[in-house]
Image 1 (cartoon, helix red, strand yellow):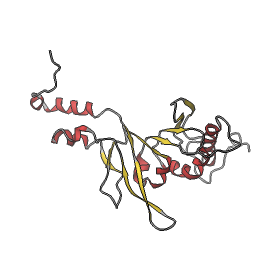
Image 2 (spheres, rainbow, N blue to C red):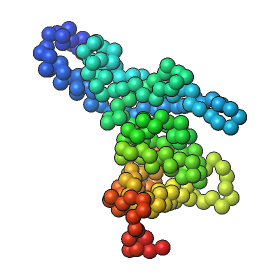
Image 3 (tube, rainbow, N blue to C red):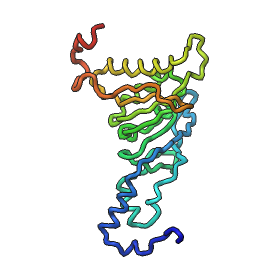
Image 4 (spheres, one colour):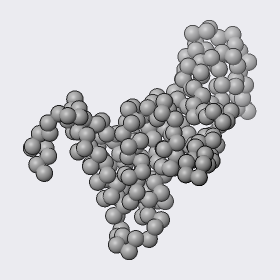
Length: 223
């Protein structure tokens, strides 16, 4: 018997049952990759002309009016710019965003604040903290951060195997010491080529409720 490929009675099912089927179909998480097209504003400044993704929109957006209505309760058009009509459907509660670390400085503020799961392709660990840590600290809902890294593309003579892992770890430890109230995401450092998990930094704040101007407990920061 050939497998069933169509179910013509679906429109006749009770609305409550159809709704449960749509909701079940909407529960699958995705990893959505984005890239950023940049152009020069003047000789020194760049701006994000457009964000694009090779990931197709969720299929439920195109099945019927009913499925589209349900899908739009989960997926919203994001990463828009004033210079492009391109946008990407994304679910902040379900999906994981993946991009190069250089995209962070161009990411729209509202999107950055709502992202919960992020995968970053790290170009050079030695400069990650200097260029990108401030943006990471503004991502208020970020819970899981995966850094895809490997030894820097710049050939440092003093570089050694594993140094880039230590460097990334110190950047996050230093950021937490500077602001003990910052709820750091859980950070996984993964080798970009092999996929091996190299180190895990548990997230959370060092001092819940601490804010700038508060005293630092000596037992936590003896230095």
